[in-house]
Length: 316
Ligand SMILES: [Zn+2]
Image (cartoon, rainbow, N blue to C red; front, side, top):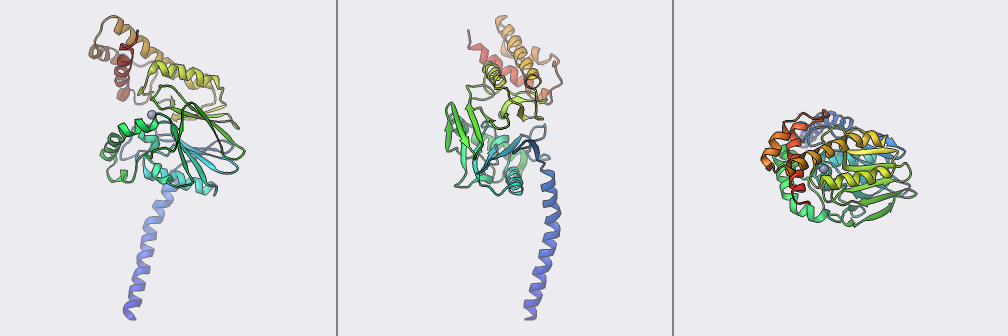
């Protein structure tokens, strides 16, 4: 009995100790995971404007959710299981409605590796028709990269194969709230999908729009310019970019990115016409100062030059 009482006291003491250790961290994690309201029923968690590091825990992409009368749609799940879980917990603090859709804007891991947090038979995973093939080709590499960067913090993270594929357009209804999904030809990637909330005219662009952070070409820069023109024509009242702050003016939102991609295409095109090699082109143009002080410019500009050179090399 004594032993049992002692064991009980010891268990209680352990629980108190555990709670005192865990609670402040949990509270800190909850408060650190910021959610901002974009429009009525539209909520955003803004990732940091950095590459993934152990310090930021891979929390670098914009993710969020939209609440309808019947259910909730999540847009992108974040870079890790922990981030997806934090988003799910934030939704649960807001509403008890079921999460009926998890919509992926594209295959990049900073937007999709939180998927396991939303594993539920009631949740349909939605993506561009090209998403499954892109995921199959790159998933292992993405995962190895995340493990290298985050170590054990990457455990349990990864993308889930979508169950509803969008070839062109699709509408999903959250209950008195229709979202228009559009699958685009190759631009930032070959599997970009946008979400347009008809009620508030809010456009979730995924990485078809970078604000302040340098755009990354993982698809076709020339295709991206065409898609941007189509996105402008939607005349959204609010734009949620894949990276950076929410925008309310279409020209101000897309202008810098358009200028950057135009310049990239023109300068690389001229180098190709002059017979300059890839290495010379990247070396020469890579030294030119940017027109705008993009975040992460030194990390991605030369890579973009290489991508656009390869893209234009095969065109007339
Ligand atoms: Zn991306």
